[in-house]
Image (cartoon, rainbow, N blue to C red):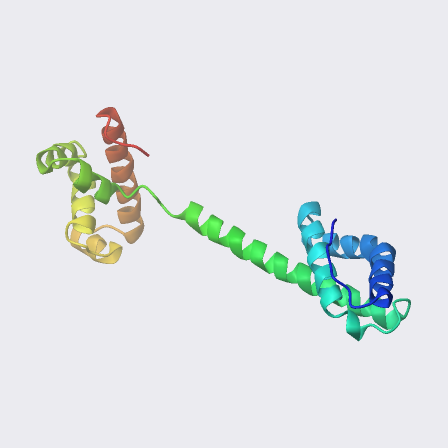
Amino acid sequence: MLLLLSFASAHERDKFEYIFNKYRRLLLHKAYEILQDYYLAEDAASEAFIRIFNNLHKIDDPTDKKCIAFIVTIVKNVSLTLLKKEKSHAAEEYDYEQQDDFNLEEHMISKISSEHIYQMLNKLGEELKDVFLLKYAHDLSHKEIGKLLGISENNVTVRLHRAKKKLTALLKEGGQAYA
C-alpha cells in the first residue's frame, strides 16, 4: 500500500506512520471480517487510512484506546459502505440476469414476416395457439384467458410456457433465433 500524503509537520507524519505500522493488519483484518474478500478488504483499509489522514487532527495520542476505537470505526464504516455497494451491484446483476432478455414476441415481430408468423403459430396446435394469441395479440390476463377457455390459470401458464418453448424451437430450426 503506497500513500503519498502531505503532512503539516513531522509530528503529524510520525503519528500517521505509527498508526499505519501498528494498526494496518488490524484494519485489514476488520475489513476482511466484514467483506469476506481480501481485495475489497485492502481497498477498505486504504480508504480508511486516507480518512484517518484527513482526520489526523482528531487523534491526540495514537497509543490511546480512543484512537484504536476511532480508526476501527472508520474501517468498519468504509467496509460497510463497500459491502453495501457490492451487494447493490450484485443485486443489479442478479436482476439483470433474471430478466428474460429474449422477448419472443418482439423477436418475432421484428425479424419475421407476418406470413411466417402465422405459419409458425399454426404449427403450435389449437390449444397452444389460442392461449398464445389471447395473451400476446389481445393482451388478456391469465385469469381472463382461463375463463374464456374454461381452464385454470395454472393451465394457461403451462400452455404459454409450452407455446414459447415450441416457437423458440421453430425459430431455431429456421435459423432465426439468436437466444
